[in-house]
Image (cartoon, rainbow, N blue to C red; front, side, top):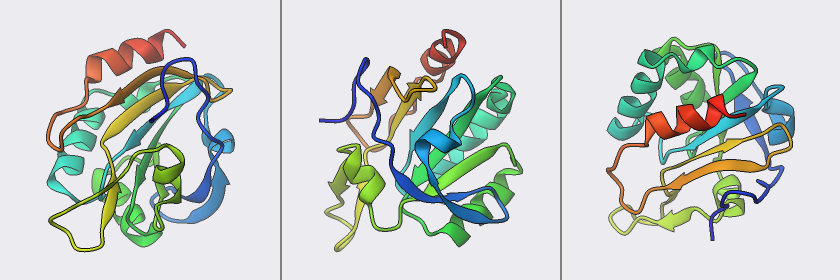
Length: 159
């Protein structure tokens, strides 16, 4: 079962990309002083991920004070960095979940029947405090619904 409000996200470790470089980093070390928003998407350059992340840029998520905005997707670090350059948002960072261990630790990994031998995380978002305690959780039950952006922003304001 994916994490719910009141639970603590695992302190996973994966390459964290900043648009130029990547370094193996624990979630706890990537969070801001007040916490973070962790957004899981299947693949960085999918149409859905492009749509979502452009909406986050337009909504001003880079202005969250002391709250890191962190993506998680199955792409490798070079693709993640290219995606961040495409977004032109150096304040967003992405974990490269190449082997699916991060998604599996969050119990989000799902087989994609139309993609042979490929699994991706259910699209989801978690707002966590600096101790990784989940303050807001959303896990989509389909592959196309948008994230509830306003609810996420309200949860960030409450951190």
